[in-house]
Image 1: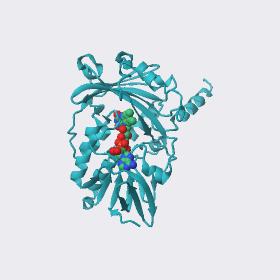
Image 2: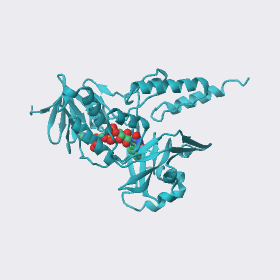
Image 3: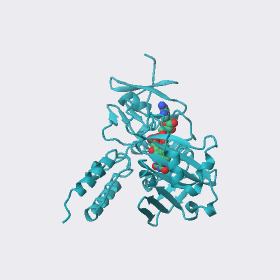
Image 4: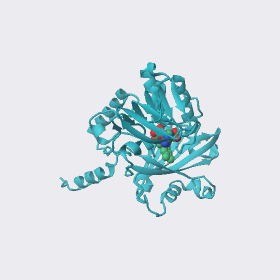
Length: 356
Ligand SMILES: Cc1cc2nc3c(=O)[nH]c(=O)nc-3n(C[C@H](O)[C@H](O)[C@H](O)COP(=O)(O)OP(=O)(O)OC[C@H]3O[C@@H](n4cnc5c(N)ncnc54)[C@H](O)[C@@H]3O)c2cc1C
């Protein structure tokens, strides 16, 4: 057997999930400084298809880690959600979202993690993972690594997941996005520090939403627009994707047709969502990243795997449950695969109750 590079904790993938794992781990166990290694197939700053909206929970995590943002950002103070039955306005006086560019943000996290004692090996792609005799061997094109604990944080198309859990394709959604330069004086998103969501695609059969976020690219104002679909019905088929048309319909004033002829203007990407039936930890390998809560988590008042502060998370769940006790509420976690079936069941049950 060839000799392997050994470390105490190995992290596959230096995106936000892998880097946050390292930052929290090294904060809790500074004695691991220099003994935690991340292997990353690219090199920061690297491109990542993402709208770059940091939710308040992420800002809280940065604060908790003592990290300044240090990259250009736009604070969003207002929101609009358009649906078939009307528009909802969001404003609460503090930022709803902080929009950054992922290449710069991830590079900033990588610098912080290195300062905290993480070793990052760039341009090193995981190809295979094997567990045997109380350790994990990770093969890459450059070297083999041996570790007692592996964190698979290598994104939506995770090699670690495929090696350890097999490659389930039933919980992969897809997204399409585009950055367009705009005049900030004549664009609502800039003039009003607003992001916009549009759910009218649901009625047209797309189980998702479109968005428009203000952002800065090379310090120039842009809109990041895109559309997400949780259950692509066309997966594996040659049928034309409905996403470009639904995106154009959501924001007609942007004349998105203009951008279709430009090479590389639209970017498409798969998104893996949390499915409680999937496995996220097997023996000495755990997966980190796009996991989020389900209705069961909410009802049990249980913090999820990605909440930076379990106490804040549980307090939030209690507030939601108190609200639900007083108001008729429909809760549809966008990453919960059971949502649609549960809503259909609830509607049928309500229909069958005789009117008094
Ligand atoms: C179009 C779109 C818009 C989005 N908008 C938002 C948003 O506004 N706000 C938000 O919070 N989330 C958004 N998301 C989701 C967000 O991008 C992901 O949840 C997030 O990037 C997940 O982080 P991660 O660290 O798990 O994975 P990634 O960010 O994908 O990082 C994985 C890392 O692993 C590396 N890697 C991959 N394969 C290997 C391998 N074999 N070996 C070694 N390294 C490997 C990659 O190079 C990468 O650096 C969006 C996603 C999409 C597609």
